[in-house]
Image 1 (cartoon, helix red, strand yellow):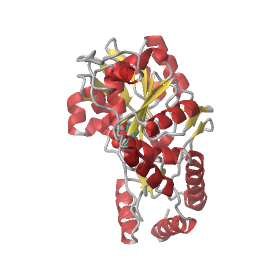
Image 2: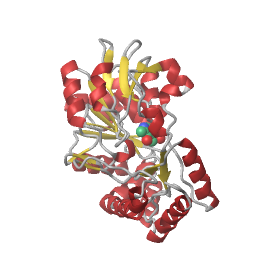
Image 3: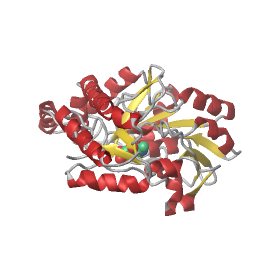
Amino acid sequence: MRLNVPVHMESETKYIQDVLDSGVLSGDGRYTKLCHKWIEKRFQLCKCLLTTSGTAALEMAALLCDIHEGDEIIMPSYTFVSTANAFVLRGARIKFVDIRPDTMNMDENLIENAITEKTKAIVPVHYAGVACEMDKINEIAKQDHLFVIEDAAQAFMSKYKGKYCGSFGDFGCFSFHETKNYTMGEGGAFCFTEGKWIEKAEVIREKGTNRSKFFRGEIDKYSWVDKGSSYLPSDINAALLYAQLEIADEINQNRKESWDYYYKQLHDLEQKGYLELAHYPSHIEHNSHMFWIKTQDIWEREKLISHLKKNNIFAVFHYIPLHSASAGRKYGEFVGEDVYTTKESERILRLPLYYGMKQTEIDFVCQKIEEFYGGKPI
Ligand SMILES: *Cc1c(COP(=O)(O)O)cnc(C)c1O
């Protein structure tokens, strides 16, 4: 059993064929526009721009914030490399702060301690699609005039206090990589709520040119106007994504049912003290991106992984904290004490979860976990 199986349906094939038949395969075609509109409307954004990846969306954010040599960026160490790389590429140093053990997100109460006169931005990562404490984070950012860039790569369709992730910060970055809830193979989206960013964002995404304006007929020729790169995906990829957006609520609901079922089936083992399950604050509504359990320690986790593997179940752990990786040591440092980041990262284990997963499959995984703990004293 794989950890993840990407969504696949007939309408995807039909829409991709549609793009191929149209003969316009490059970016910003019909399906890209449909995706933009869908996302803007649902998440109440001023603008959504599809990108070639979540990484590209983060890079756009770094460019728009005009990050340069000597700037400092605050983020958790427990995240994917792209969260840091996007800013390191522009010459910034990364200040890693500790996470909360319940959500595995950056601890909002430790952010202020990491702020210096060089700080330019805070980058909350909604791990497993579980929202960070955005009220507090935005309040801190406002006080110190810092940018807030949401790494919402895993949080498409997640909510915080009833509002969608990706719409809280100055910029929101989504990923539609194969491993995420909604996918276009490789891809992402760059989003914001303030109109003042539109022109600059379009230029950065279109190789530093004002080609977007040209296509809208607002100018009669386009030229190089600023820094930029190529961040727009092919309409073929957008067609794949649009088919999934059409059934976004169904995908979300289906994953939630699987998530809840896992929780119910493993609750007993938690009660008996064998493992730990997630306990999220009640004001967040996550997108069931990930179902994780926590083992006693890294050794127990290793044994459980191999027990599951013997039964053809692929459960995996997640990030090696960035501050302990060689590039992380070179480009940043941990601020304060690492109470939870390393310890919790060594306990977490992700179980298979995907759209359309059968209850019998979840039963099988849970049964094998029970079997593992069965013979063990508490
Ligand atoms: C997946 C992911 C990214 C990168 O997205 P890509 O589309 O693979 O570039 C960035 N940050 C986090 C937290 C992610 O999970």
